[in-house]
Length: 312
Image (tube, rainbow, N blue to C red):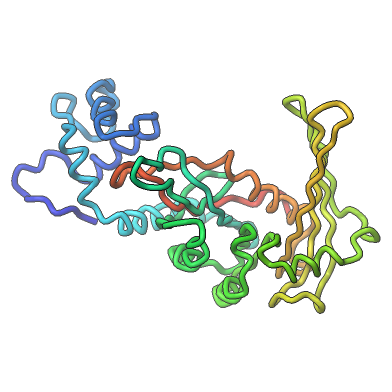
């Protein structure tokens, strides 16, 4: 990709300026003035490693002007393709999972605009694709365009929150050859009622995790039922009940029960694998933090790859 620049007088390559700005943002420098300060103060060895002569560092005007001249969608596509080629080639078949979720990025709120809402992913923190989302309700319409930026989704497991428990999304993923795990909540009241009325009391725990740390104890259980018929959702093969009990104080448990569905059959994923994918999706807010360099350093919508956590 290229920015509109006159060939004569070019001191710094586009890739050098963008890479330098990214390094500054990762180091915690948010504004263009702060990025320029980082560039001015960083040791000579660092700027030389970035391809910059120590005595000819980019100015604040250059650092501001060049990123603003870029097409953010094109930049996202180029970076996504590069990351995909470097992170996905060695993942075995059936071991790739991508989560799509909405979050609001810190620092994206200003006096004139609401905070940006984004879709983000988990575990490795490698950003594969991104797109801007105007508001919470628009996340549904951005699901397919976002995943279109990933070239090959065959045999990939897509995890998504309740907002994306949509029949159109399931049909789209089937066309792409992908599998899915979708959380079900009140936005699908009839489906949620169907899942809650299943005979869970007669179903033994498929997995049970008991974790302690930071003065807390959390017990997570997963129950699974085959639902080839009777569930009002296309291609749903299994229903899941996830129960989390947290002990914050002595003898004081809080319990949360969540339902999910998947098109994966019993022979395609073991219970421990399903539990790991669900748990990985919930951990997203602790795994991902992204700041955009374009415009006013607002948030981007992110899709991040994560490797299989449990051996098949």
